[in-house]
Amino acid sequence: MTPPALIETTRVLSLIPPMTQLNTPYPATAYLTGFLRSRQVRAAQEDLALALMLELLSPAGLQQVVEVAARLPAPGPRVAAFLAQRPRYLGTIAAVIAFLQGRDATLAHRIAGRSFLPEGERFRSLEAFEGEDPVAWAFGALGVADRARHLATLYLNDIADVLRDAIDPRFEFVRYGERLAASQPSFDALAAALAAPPNLIDSTLQRLALQALERHQPTVVLLSVPFPGAVYGAFRIAQAIKAARPEVVTVLGGGFVNTELRELAEPRVFDFFDHVTLDGGERVLLALLEHLQGRRSQQRLVRTFVRDAASGVVRYINFAEPEVPFADTGTPTWDGLPLDRYLSLLDMLNPMHRLWSDGRWNKLTVAHGCYWKKCSFCDVSLDYISRYDAASAELLVDRVQAIVAETGQTGFHLVDEAAPPKSLKAFSAELLRREVAISWWGNIRFEKTFDAALCRQLADSGCIAISGGLEVASDRLLALMKKGVSVDQVARVTRHFADAGVLVHAYLMYGFPTQTVQDTVDALELVRQLFANGCIHSGFWHRFVCTVHSPVGLEPERYGVELVPLPPGNFARNDVGFIDPTGVDHDALGAGLKKAVYNYMHGIGLEEDVRMWWDEPMPKTRIARRRIERALQAA
Ligand code: B12
Image 1 (cartoon, protein in one colour):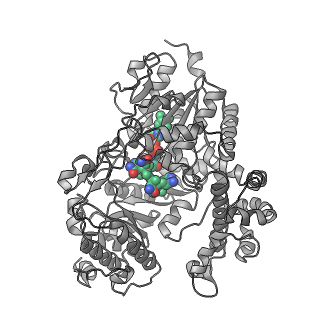
Image 2 (cartoon, rainbow, N blue to C red):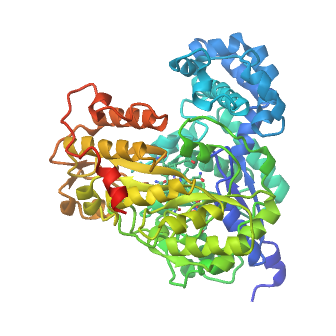
Image 3 (tube, helix red, strand yellow):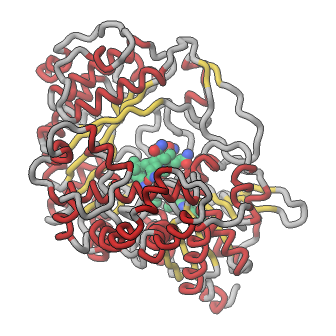
C-alpha cells in the first residue's frame, strides 16, 4: 500500500498546446480534468494556445513583434507595411482583442466604418465583392457586429502574416508547424526544429508554460495533441518543462497520437515525454497514476509507450484491462479556463465553418465511437471509431445541466464522429421534458430515421445545425465506400432538417478510388440540385486522402487501387499515396467544385449548367434535371 500522503502529492496539470482553435477550448483537457476530479485526483488545466495568442496580441507582445520585425535586414512587403503603420497597430490591438472577446461590443461601429483599423493585404479580399458596400454583400444590411468582426479578423490575419514573415513561416492561428508532424515517417524535421534556438513565439510559449508550472506545481503534466498542428507546440512546452523541472512527469496523448503514432519507435520523443499513450485517456491515466504512485508495476501500464532506461528502446505496454465505461467518465469541466477570453473570429463566409471558429461552445460527446463504423475512407479500425459505447439520455442531460451551471453558457457542440439517431431522439426528448433551453449542433449520418417529425423534435430541443457526409454524391461510389446512404435518401433527410429550420452542411468528397471525370460532373449536378431544392445550405469539398488505418488503406485491391509504399520510419504514419488506374487529375477538378459550392451557398449560379465552373471542356451530366425534386416528391 502506498501511504495516502504520496497519493495526495499527485497533482495533474493538463495543457492545450498551440494551436487548435481560438474561439473555444479544445475539449480533451476538460474531459480529462473532469474525469480525474471524479476520481478524487487533484487536477487542473490551462489553455496555452489561447494564452500565447493573447500575449503576442497584447500591446507589449506586439511591441516585441515590432522589434523583431524592425531588425530584419530585408523585410518583405507585408512586414514593411506593418512597420509603416506600427503606431496604429499598437494603438488598436487591445481594443480589437477586447471586441473579439465580446467585452466591448460598441466598438463595432468604429471598426465597421473602416477608418479605425490599419488595413493590410488581407483586406484586399474585400475587393473581390462587387458593389459599393463589399461586406454588406456577405452579411446583409443588418450585420454591423458581424461586419466589424470580419474586418477585425482580417486585421488579425494581417498580423499573423507578419508573425509568419518576420518570426516563423510555420505559424497559423489554427495550426502551428503542422507539416513537421503530419504523416512524417521520420522525427528528423521535428527534432531539428526543436533544436533550433527558440524564436519569439517559442520563447513566449515556454515562458507561459513555466508560469503555469509555477502556479499549479504539478507532479504530472498531460499534453493533448488532437491534430498535427498542435504537435510542435506540445514538444516546445515539454522541452521547457524538462529543462526547468526534469522531475515533472510529462505525458503525450490525444487524437494525433491515437491516429498517427500507433507504431511509435523513435527514442528521441522520450527526451521530451516520459510516456506516450494511445486512445481514451481514462483507463490509461488511472494505470499511469497508480504506477507513478508506486502501486502498479511498469508491466501493468495500459496502452503506454515508454523508453527502456537500459537499452534506450521504445516499448509499448498494454496490460489488458476493461475500459472505463462512457457512462462513468464523469462530466467535463471547464474550470480554470478563461472562458470570457476566447476570440470569436469571423473568417470564412461558409456558415458551418463559421460555427467552428465563432462562438464559445461547450462540448459534449453523445456516445463514444461510431455506431456505423463501416465507411471505407474512415479510420474505422481505431478505438475512437470502433469502440461504440453509449450513455442514457438522462445522464447526457445531467451532464448538459452541470456544464451550463458551471460555464453559464448554453451552446453545445456535439463532437461525435456521427451522433447516433436513437440517442439523439432520446436526448432531445429528455431536453424537452426537463425544459432545458440550449442550442446544439454536430455531425450525423443522413439516416432514414431522421424523418420530418424527428427533425422537428430535434429543432425544438435546440438543434441549430447539423453536418453529415454526402461524400462523393454518387450512388455507385456511396455503395463502394459503404456509406449506407443513397443520394435520394440524403435529399429527403436534409430537406426534413431544412424544413425544421436547421442549417444543413454537407461534407463532400472528390478523388475517391475509381471516381471518373463523369462521376465528378454528376456529383456536382446533384449537389447543385440539393442547393436549388433547399435541402442543403452549406457544403465543402475535401480531397479524398487514403489513410493506413482505413479499409481502403488496409485492403486497397478491393477498391481497385495500388498503394505507394510508405518510406521507412519510426515516427508518424497516416496518409498513404495510391495509384488509381483511372488516372483522373482530381486536383484540376477540385478548383471548379469549390468555386461552384461557394457560389451556390450564396444562391449564385443555381440554374446554370454545372460545366460553367471549369475552364476545361467537361462531359455533360448524365443526371436528370429534376432528379432531386422527384426524390423529394416520392417521399
Ligand atoms: C469534432 C472534431 C473536429 C471539429 C472540432 C475540432 C475542435 N478544434 O474542437 C472540427 C470539425 C472543427 C475538426 C477539425 C479538424 N480535425 Co477533427 N476531429 C473531431 C473529432 C470527431 C472529435 C474531437 C473531440 O472533440 N473529441 C473529444 C475529445 C475529448 O477526445 P480526444 O481529444 O481524443 O481526447 C481523448 C483521448 O484522445 C485522450 N487524450 C487526449 N489528450 C490526451 C493527453 C494525454 C496525456 C492522455 C493520457 C490522454 C489524452 O483522452 C481523451 C478522453 O478519452 C475527432 C475524432 C475523434 N473521434 O476523436 C477528429 C480528429 C481529432 N480531427 C482530425 C483532424 C485531422 C482535423 C483537421 C486537421 C482536419 C483538416 N484537415 O482540416 C481539423 C483541425 C481543425 C483545428 N485546427 O481545430 C483527426 C486528427 C488525426 C490526425 N491525423 O492527427 C481526428 C482524430 C479525426 C480523423 N481521424 O481524421 N475536428
